[in-house]
Amino acid sequence: MTKRTSAKYKIDRRMGENIWGRAKSPVNKREYGPGQHGQRRKNKLSDFGTQLRAKQKLKGYYGDLTEKQFRKIYGEAERVRGDTGEMLIGLLERRLDAVVYRAKLVPTIFAARQFVNHGHVQVNGVRVNIASYRVKEGDVISVREKSRQLAIILEAVQSSERDVPDYLEVDHNKMVVTFVRTPGLGDVPYPVVMEPNLVVEYYAKN
Image (cartoon, rainbow, N blue to C red; front, side, top):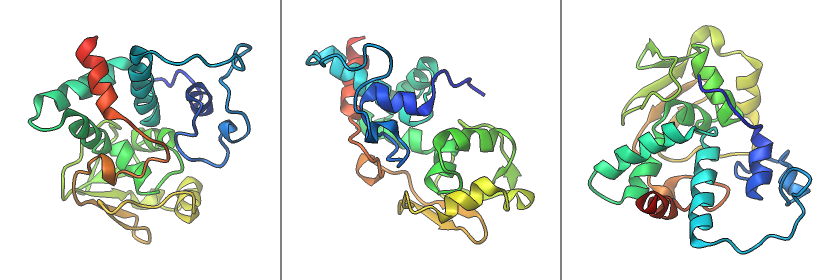
């Protein structure tokens, strides 16, 4: 399990955006960044700064992935024929922790990573405890029977904060999710604008 190096809400404040759309985000009250210099006037970002920010925002959204993890995923997207930005989004959404989060089985992406790592999730009937495990179209993801009454699941299922996207079929009564298809950027319900094209530009130049 990758150690999370910064609190999720600190990521929000650093970006100046409520990137998960959570009601508790401090950005809802204070749009400036963290720390003693957070309220300084924001200068206009250079092209490099804009591209870097787009990369950091996407990395942060999926649980503050390390640069090594994110660069590896980008490299895979780059090798596949088609639009690299779209491929990148598809690969990120196929991570098991992302599917668990997107299906509203847990309240946050960080909780999803921990939930998978602790062995609460099965893929096609087999327990998988690797958050970065990549699901395939048609895979059935389920919560182990002895884990289905955990408070964290019941809280997430009842929350109206997020909707389940249509590339997943979810039965919250049985705690079963089917990964129907790999989404593109336009299919993913990001609360903020994500710009994978800028991520592509960043890596093309750096």
